[in-house]
Amino acid sequence: MEKYKEMVEDLDRSVGEVLTALKRSGQEEHTVVVFSSDNGGERFSYNWPLSGNKASLQEGGIRVPNIVRWPARLDGGQVSRVPVFSPDWTATLLEVAGARPHPAYPLDGVSLAGYLLRGERPVERDLFWRVRGERALRRGNWKYYRGKSGRDQLFDLAGDIREQADKAAVEPARLAELRAAWEAVDAGLLPYPA
Image (cartoon, rainbow, N blue to C red; front, side, top):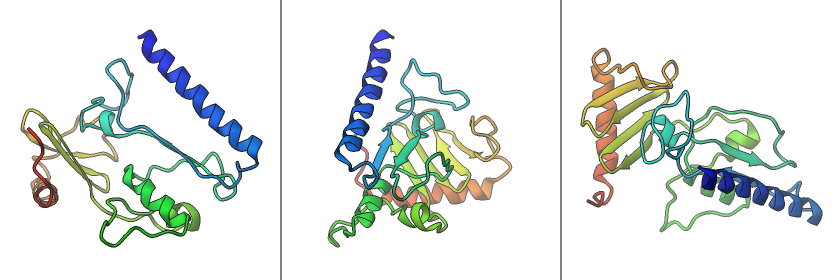
């Protein structure tokens, strides 16, 4: 447990050093800093009220905070509940830098620049995940999930962030629609390694 505490303290100190260096160099106002985790809490983490943790596709394994700092363009202290995923930051940073991805290598993410900088509505799209023995797809507040039990489940995250009230039996059409959407995305990808 002490090892994890030291890791978090070291991370906090390192981020502070980067921010201090930006301030000292005069680049603080015009530098975008994005901080995000790659997964949910480790086995010693306290993820309440979320269920699951690292390596799980429950919210405790995939819902992580993103912190964005850009003093010249973004007001501090804002909170957004719009779900995004890591590749969105690549698309966003390319757009704010005035660059475009190579047409032969399309990006998986979408730019958040319009939402963050111009007040546009966020892009509505499905978010897709798969890991060993689990699958999930989120559309708006609805989440299709199949865990290691192999049972398809459906959750309305707007009122059930803990993923405890399975709506599969009362929303079979929605479950079928989201499962079909997940399978369509999966069919276009390489098979998941055994």
